Length: 333
Ligand code: AQP
Image (tube, rainbow, N blue to C red; front, side):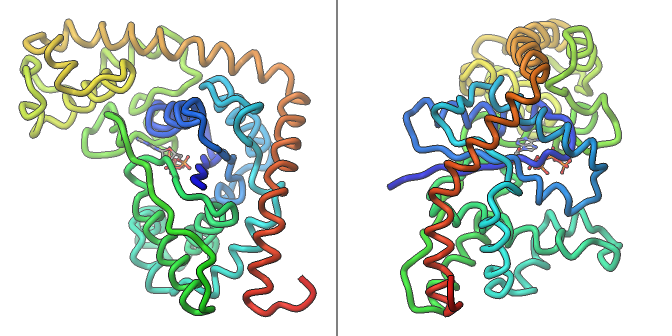
């Protein structure tokens, strides 16, 4: 049976990229009646050092972000990764299945470790094996993600295939990435060649879900663009990454295609389009930030939601890990 899994790192505040590329899709998939499991991947976050108090806060804030974006803990399973130990246990098995060369080819590893790979944590290198475990410990079949995660999903399939082959079983499924909509790769507002990211040193490069209306409007007004008017068709945006990004954001918020948006706004100058986009972004995001703030007033309730989600998750993970141990030949599992 189809099962959806996805996660987000509590490594900082949420951005518009996380919202349009992930959270908005998560609640849509839940509302399509699918079996959905969503996780705050705190064990992934610590592959880069996190201040412990901030990590605790970010985990709760992220949970509030999921709920405020429409993920309903009564319909989806919502929990934090470290509370379900089978993720890390299966990741160890996968560390023995995956090959060093596979990890070395991951662009996220190359980007994050940079030239100083000797100084990066071993966990950062092994990140994709833990991600494969996150997904496969549920036998999840569909993973909604942004474009940047596609390579990690391919590696998850490689791990599943090699495990099945090495042990002569047909146990782990082949997972499909679900990369859909107009905003699978939201770009920086300052540089149309870089993805919008919570760790970008420039706050002006991103919209945070916690930004107030004035800040959102100001960031969009100052977003880098070119001097031309908007074209009337998507192909007119091909060599205009900044313009394309703003149109993609508009399309994603309104659930339209880029061509539908351009049929409406083609011919307009940015001086006219940017305030339209700012109004739209404020209208869509301010209810989310207000709700996040309200939920964060009661962290005990958030912790209860996470604890209950972890219990529900373990009903699935414990039997799958036990079976994996049996397949591998670990006695007493
Ligand atoms: N700019 C983006 N456009 C579309 N989707 C995005 N995602 C992230 N940035 C964009 C999607 O959000 C989900 C969760 O990502 P994550 O927080 O686990 O890690 P990340 O992809 O590394 O996010 P950041 O913001 O870039 O964090 P840092 O700066 O810490 O690396 C994923 O589905 C991702 O595709």
